[in-house]
Length: 348
Image (cartoon, rainbow, N blue to C red):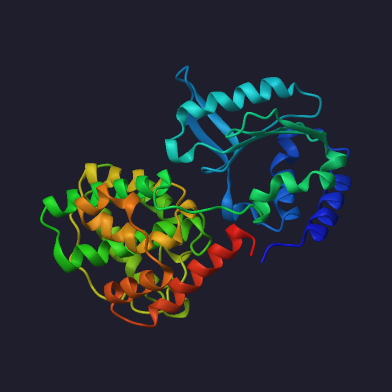
């Protein structure tokens, strides 16, 4: 459950007093933003990353101070620096972001002042001093979980998710990896993508494992995924103590989703790129209410084209999931994650 507005206001006031005299961007910026998110009851590392590297429009590399994929981009400066320049610098980063990563909000700050841009509104930015943060907390309802969101099947992010995973499905099927094994593999990948963006897995854990550990030609990706599935099916106290550190960070997934051995998947460079492309979406923005339709559309090109005309209730999602995952007990994990995510997003 989100914190009450009174609790958030109290936290924001304490935060403002704690940081009233800070000046140095380099020394304390990350601690500042960790504290900022904490004021809203949200651990920063569960939703956003520091120092995201991007290629700017001039071809040079840039580093985004903080990025919450698809939601918020922050550019932070030392006290007294020009916030107009900070805004321009932040907009320059957009060129290097995938469409699914582009933020809805842009926030610039110099410790003493904030300026919040709603990029989907024609309204001027909200500008206020640090000392007044407690008066403006409702503008950050999208962080706290109080901003209600209406999910629709035709939401572009849902359609984009189906299209990206559908391309991977088609490539795997064309290569001869098909039938039941392909269905189980894609259910596992969909679960993983959703889990890493909703806090069940460490943030970006699956994407980073693929990007950092597998070869660009994709030749060893199947082996890494097979090992990951084995880890997810093993309780921590039963795992080998020599396990790769990144693999060891993944939680145990109770149930049978990862129990069935699958034939090793022979990925190539294109397939690896398609999976990384799918992981670039913010899967926390995918509507839980269309998971059944989403999976159907991934597996069926015709359904993929018609995703916007379908709606699947949570009951039907769970019926679909139990049929695909085979075992009833796995439903507990997925059902609870869907329900928890819905509460957080809608501020119920």
